[in-house]
Image 1 (spheres, rainbow, N blue to C red):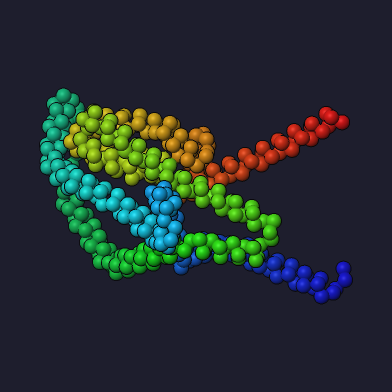
Image 2 (image 1 turned 180 degrees about the vertical axis):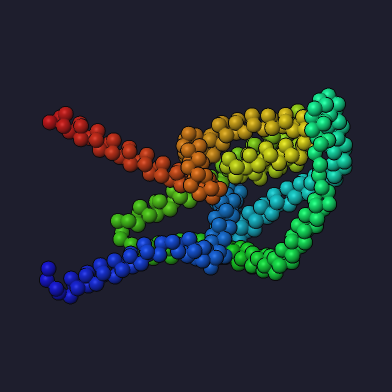
Length: 388
């Protein structure tokens, strides 16, 4: 190979690439630390992007559907103020839903805590009566329990020591907790401000991104990248809408069922189910456990029947409602929704469950189009060969 200027540049580039690649592979164990560092530095920006994406789903519906009549009739002043008004309406809807939930949950939560507090002595008295009945009915068990000796002095000392250690731990962590709360509040405020700026000028940012892509990326790849971004946005936005719809359906069915079977604390548990169902798979398990624990204070038998009821409702939700509601929104068949949730949860936990469904939707669309393209190409080839 001739050692001219162009070849020398290629050799230098290959050497530099080899050195960088070797260094990266050698220090790959530092990758999680690097990702955490970058995430901590860019946390306000990332949080702002998440806020902007979620609010934009509702803001777009308000802007295109709620204000559809104004968009057609008013063409002078309205286009200039449409975006801020749509953003305020979307934000008011979100805050209104949160306030409505709090108005429903907080009084019910206070009544529940008061009722549970009043039921605790009755629960322990009933437990003592139940143990006394067991001791009377089964003398061997009673003799075994009576022979158990507990050194209450040692127990009290252990509790006191544990309390001292807990107090010292709380005192030492007060400064850290205060710092984390302050940092979290600042991050939240900065993220919200960033999301407002993104939503107010999203068309301008979109044009700027397109210019950068056209300037630095070959033209044959631009169309593919833009189309992939559109598919991803559509999949994630539809997933959010479908997940919220499914949660409301499940919470409503839970409230109706608990009211029919006269379970206590139906409203509080149903609202809890709505929030927990936003988390695939794990949310239903937490709803079962927490609901059973709350009901067991009032009636252990009803708690067992609640578990049976919610397991049946969970099967109905997991096999019929969730795959069809969420799957229809993201364009993914019911079977592949379950597969996506399973794989995402096993690989990346909760985040994997939430993200893997829209990602699999994008992959499913791309794979389906590629398969159809190859089948058409193969069919044309077969037709040509048959004609010849």
